Amino acid sequence: MMQRNEHDLLGDVPVPADSLYGAQTQRAVENFPLYGARRIGDFPALINALMFIKQAAADVNATIGDLDPVIAKAISESATKVRRESLSDAFPIHYLHGGGGTSANMNANEVLANLAEEQLGGQRGQYRRVHPNDHVNRNQSTNDVYPAACHIAVILTWPALHTALESLASELERQAAQLAGQARIARTCLQDAVAISFADLLGGYVQVIRRCTARVQTAVNTLHAVPLGGTICGRASDVPPAYLKAIVPRLAHVTGDPAYRQSANLFDAAQNLDDLAAVSGTLALLASSLIKIAQDFRLMNSGPETGFSEITLPPVQPGSSIMPGKINPVIPEYLIQACFKVVGNDLTCQSGVRHGELDLNVWESVVVFSVLESMPLLQSAVEVFTTRCVAGIQVHPARNTANAQTLIPRLTELMKRHGYSTVSQVCHDAGQDHEKLKALLKDRFGDD
Image 1 (cartoon, rainbow, N blue to C red):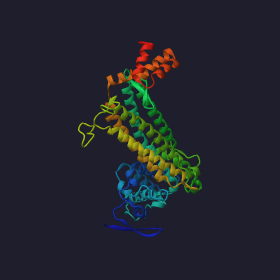
Image 2: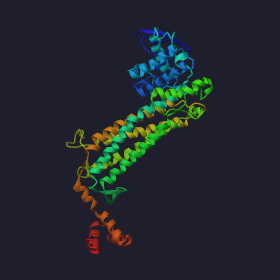
Image 3: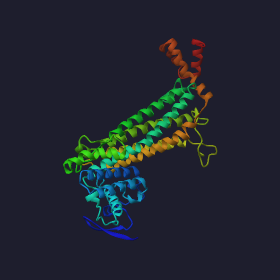
């Protein structure tokens, strides 16, 4: 492999000759070996977030006279190029790199410096026209860039999951409307309870999904507060006042999202990751609710002869390598396992919050990438659960109608007419013998 030689604080660094990254990225590649793990380039939302920040910073620095407009334009256009093209190989760093995001920030700086350098007639790795620190990173620190990028990345990722959740809620609503007249037996403690309709059950699912979705949306909206301008540990005195005033409005402009605002306390933003962890917490609550729904589908589908057998889920694959005719509820099981991962990711996020010592919480990577893993996991599982499971369920009318007319529902109706104590005494007289109880009820109440 052809190499070029670059130089940083620690000395000479051989870098692949055609790479868009430079010395500090190469050191991170060697310091944090992948062994099959994901790279930051495998999370395009984070890369796009870094590019939005670098573009906004270059624009503001040119406007306030802190950066040559020609250099600023080259940086800004290079950031747009990275966002529009697939350049994931230019960001090869392990997603859990140490240093509080310094490697990710410098990776972005080096890529943009090399692209801008070439645009202005130079060569990769020279940095004579555009330097990663002096120009691309002007008036920035990893301490404000990386947390802001983490916020933006989550905001960019959320809409796809939001759409998937709304589609699931809408499909459940459609099924509820179709099954409004179909009775089923409700169960408490897995024991027979009273007769309700499938619309009652499915309508409850709709409400919890939409309630959980709203919680996530609220938590994501909070991330529009970004700490740009609070460079070292939140200290705003390291940037020109004009930059501090203009950077977040410019970010709102380049992202097309007017909701961005500066963090109310930049020192707080450097010290704490609770806003990111709050998103994770709402995702975990959503996941727990989805587990409950998927488990219900498995129970109602259990059988076909010895289980509940109240519904049949669409068959999507053979269920056994040895038992002919067996069909398993693999789609709900996929959703459940994805949700297990989301709940585990949330535990990781909470650890990141509580271990952020003193003036800078350096665990943004493990927190944000947990969230960025959870969202697509849920999106995928929710989409297939909607289209390959919920949309094709079949209800067994005879089974459900018979269940709804069994003993406990009848006892409950008798209680409403004759009182709890009266009906309870008949149950006591019968002991646990259900056939005797049925006979006593007929003798006492007839066809009532």
